[in-house]
Length: 344
Image (tube, rainbow, N blue to C red):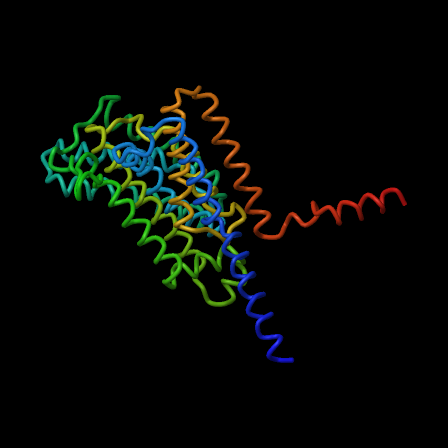
């Protein structure tokens, strides 16, 4: 009898493992990206060329870097709408410091430090003032953008030529340096989320802040650190972006807030907190990049591009609800039962 049950248990365990893998947001995203890439490559053979694939990755680097930080913030049940403005402020600060005669690396460090300082300011107000992060970061969006205008006077700031390799350099047969920086930050973010005490605390706070506080987790300080993290990454993204285009502009990063949130949510980060994936955020950013590149290669309307990206975000949210088992009420059996009860 036991000999008969053993193969059945193994088969059931194998099926459960496959189903669990299929249900993972990252698996679904990777499948969508592969299918989309195959379709586009059939329509335009230039899509799968090495230079074009590198170009796709390079275009998602800035959004992807910040999406790593946004994932931590969303997991902790907060949100940051100021990242595009903080990106611009960090970049123009670095340009202004360099223009005053400072060492290029010092200028870059100061710019990144400004991003971290903005994150610390946001986190402190959210925690100490008990104000919604939506409101605080919305305010920081305007504050940081106004400061960029004051610093630059509306004029672009020259970036150090010594740092141009960050945004424009290529190594190992053509791989952009910015892409390597992005991949390294994704790896560090994944390890930070899944292999460190900080990552476990962020997840616990997003699941149940009251229980986390009872368990001795410093909820306030951990939340502040998540905003410092995303501010730092926005600063790094600002340096990368400005070295890609060669100048730091006050209008840099305009509208990036929505793309960053979209990449994180598509990647599996829940707006209700407690769940998220850095690898998923990476794939979410890549999916947005592939979509935009496909529309350019196929010469399709940019309005249709916006529509498709919005549709992808909605489908990702629905998939997340299915993955969590929250769509059971839509099962045909349950729908029939509800219909019978209404008739009765």
